[in-house]
Length: 461
Image 1 (cartoon, rainbow, N blue to C red):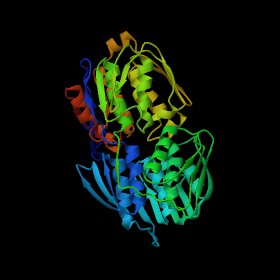
Image 2 (cartoon, one colour):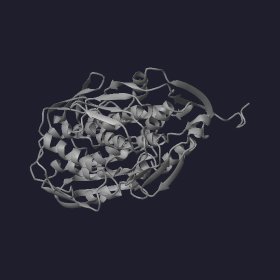
Image 3 (tube, one colour):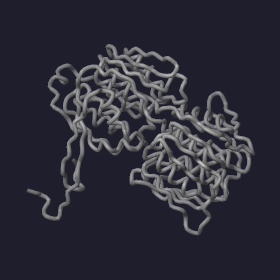
């Protein structure tokens, strides 16, 4: 019987459940870093010649970046299932048509912020638009900064300074610009990646405390490696890109994704096993390798052989930690914290509220479905571990992912310890890691449980 009546439509709901069964032992190499892939794609496009990229990530976020670059004349040749890319930027051409070139960027915050800066510096007439959630994610502070440099205008078409973004530009004039540092480090990284296209030198000054500093350090290293001289203050508060700077490199090898690696290190921590992640060391460009230091504080053993990092789980204890620099791993830590011996306090991540979803409030909501006591603060959470009785009496839960890839990947790990944890919409991991559940299944050496439901379209499942 369909209580909604004969006009109701049916839509599928798929869930995945990771099954608990002892310590996780093994090794794995995650796909290429999303953060590095999208930075290098812009550098390759701006180089104006052929460059070879190896270890690239194939995902929704990188696909929308590639699609946008191809629409403005960049030629892309792909091999090795998208992991090797030859980028020819010699045909990069601004679009100056009377009608703007509309570029779809889905829900990729990296793409919309980087492309907004890059295309405004290149020049042309564009509209960047995406899914409804993208049109709720603020970008006004970046537009304010660009409008200090641009010969033209860049405006937000949604309330509160949110996309779609309309760019009408003859390029950047150069000069000194200030940018807010407390909402997203991607604003600053976008400006830095676009600066080599400016007509004159560009000086960028950070206004306020800069969040996620390791990502800015990564951007500076990309500029240096790709031929752009950059003068950077020790506190990452002032940057100078001289006039005449130009991207000039022939090839680039992209590191495995450290944010993705956090899920596999967490699997070891949760189960008392040992997991080796290949291709990363503590000297990696990505700040999220610092997640292993947090696990070490919680009682895990960590070893680094220069080309891989291994984590062995131990007796877990709660900690207090500022995760501003590694905020993309907060959800991963939250699952580990459920099985520690005391509460864990996470702070310094107020900017997580402006990600694919509110990664503080929504994370707290889902943890409570597992039985956890969670206190939400403005800039983080206090997570109390599950008691032995709660774990023994756990009868399963279906967890929402909010179309957020990191919610899906992290929450699924609870299934390594608790039976019957169903994760809705697991396909949302395609945003950055399409093979996540297949790789996790390979690592833990047992299949997941998949279920499909029919629900009334428009209803909450």
